[in-house]
Image (cartoon, rainbow, N blue to C red; front, side, top):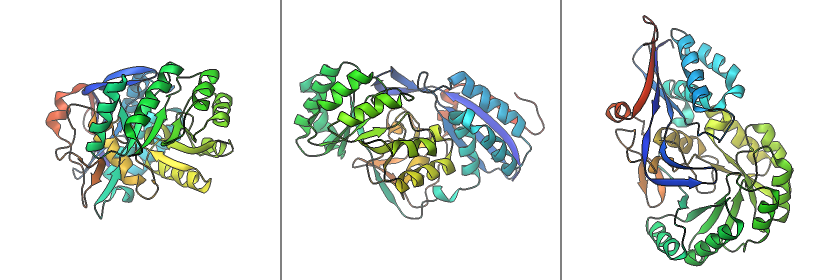
Length: 362
């Protein structure tokens, strides 16, 4: 299939409420969206959001990668573009995901096909800080159908433990808890936190220390009273194999944008299962485009609530027919295929570049 046109968009989608993690507070999602059009008008879409501080890539490097690749790709066939992107994916996995996902969608990758309606239970972060507010929020989330609540930690050990205890008390066995430090602790803090947890109702503790600090994360896993899950440390199948050798690490968290696309993510989930590791998948700072794709490809692999809840955070949705959320689950309807709402796209675009066969970049 020849590619006749590629548009690269940068969006700014305001959130319903601030989303706080250890290294920043989000007030908007700012994804790069790649729109790829074939000779017969078929369109594929891809997404990658590169939050500053989350990876070695930056929003500007991602933009440069996508626009440079798009300029070179117009007029080529999809197989040639896929090969060119694959050769550079290891150096820019987030940005490459936007391009490879657009190609996969354009060619109707079989992993994206939904033959039968499927429900993907989602986890949800608890944002309240004070005990009384936490209790009220837990009730609201349970009423919405959620049964896995995530507590963001990674700031102050004592205060983080207090909030975890407050969620445990409010939840009272009606669901389970996960915790995510987003690399916020050093070795001593991570060990102090993990070793002090009452494990009742807690499913896992996610990424206590730096992505490349395997020794610190291993030390925390050794003393943790609950299973450890590595997230930012997992960039490829070699990292999965390494994680499987660490006592106390029982799960890996995968994101398509960190791995570099659909096929690489499927291979990573397969490798994790072969290594005896549990798999969690999803991106809490993605629009419904990437959340939909991750929900689709995760169906054969996920036994836990998915983390592809980012689509619920912005004030607006990208799909003309929004993804359905019901009873704490993302619902993939039989036969569903995304149709981007161009009005929403254009209203929230902060910059765009267009590449077409008969024109230079506009």
